[in-house]
Length: 226
Image 1 (cartoon, helix red, strand yellow):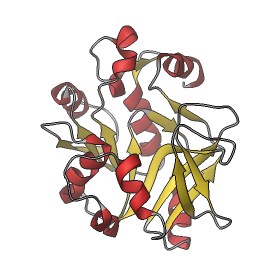
Image 2 (cartoon, one colour):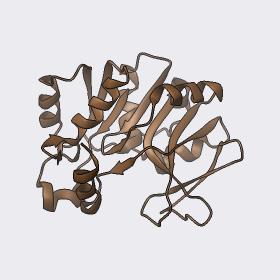
Image 3 (tube, one colour):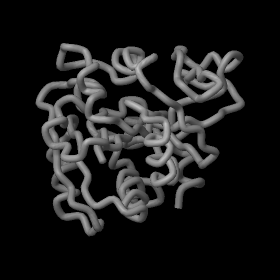
């Protein structure tokens, strides 16, 4: 499991100060603790945290964590973006198929079912998707009839597609062959579009999805996550 944990969380700073976004407190518990507890409860034992902003603070916290996980770190010395962070972590990934997730999003998707779906589709990459009814600031994902991802749309044009990514991914390591040549790039804007037509599928779930990237959604997490 590779977890993106390097974001600044600028929009949350009025409420969280200079605390790294993934360590923002939700009912007195760091958000990333909730995320890691969930994946540990589903049988994961090894996690690679991709750190960047305030890396020392995050790494110190998880070196002394009581979570039942072996936690390793992949630290970017300069900002590499979400895609660059995955690329940097490649040498630490041991399995031919691996999961990735955004450290500021929570969705209690059953990973065993997601993994079975990925294998059933013989996918190069798969994304967990959630159906939303209202307009939002998430980009939307367009699916074919057999749930193959065929397009991405900026800022959720929900008229043509109600599906958004919940920040949980499954990749065959061969997906690294399709990454941009540069070291710094966005996984959503500059990598995912390159996978369209190459065995890229959406796994639709109705499980709760929360992103703490804005003050409103961060406050929502205080009441909806326990």
